[in-house]
Amino acid sequence: MTAFPTWLLLVAALIVFALAVVAGYYLRKLNVAQRQQAQQLAELEQAAADQRQRVNDSIQIIARTLLDDGVGLTEASIRIRVLLDALQVEQGVREEFVAFYTIAEKTSHIPILQDWKKLPRKKQFQFELEMARIEEEYKDFALDAARRILGRSF
Image (cartoon, rainbow, N blue to C red):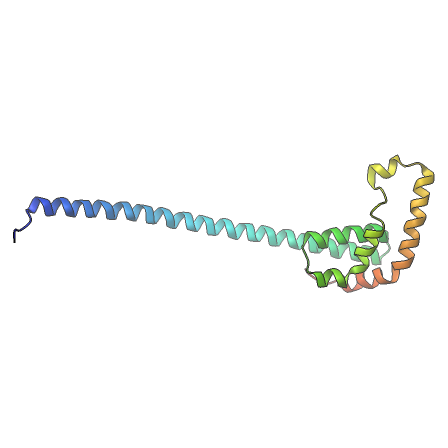
């Protein structure tokens, strides 16, 4: 059995050391990237939680305003339905607050904003009568739903 020359052992040790340095460099780089990714994820989660809270606050404001007669039932129903859908609430929540969904659905064909302004006054009046009829039919259910939605967070 022959012994390895010293220079060969020294070269092998240098190669192993160089590989260990490179591995350490990339391990540190990976560690930094993982920490940055975790921080970005935490920031995104916080932003999502903040947005969810703002939407929940909006629902509360609209429900309170509806109960205080500060907004029409049709408008409140449309807005609450859109906000609940934005929160992607479960089917059980949609069923619990079906009054908002029903009113919004039954009035979805009525033009809004600029389209409303373009309508002849006679057509606006017809739609107003239709909204009044729908609101009267579902008023008690919607007001009950507005009371139940107060203080809830989705």
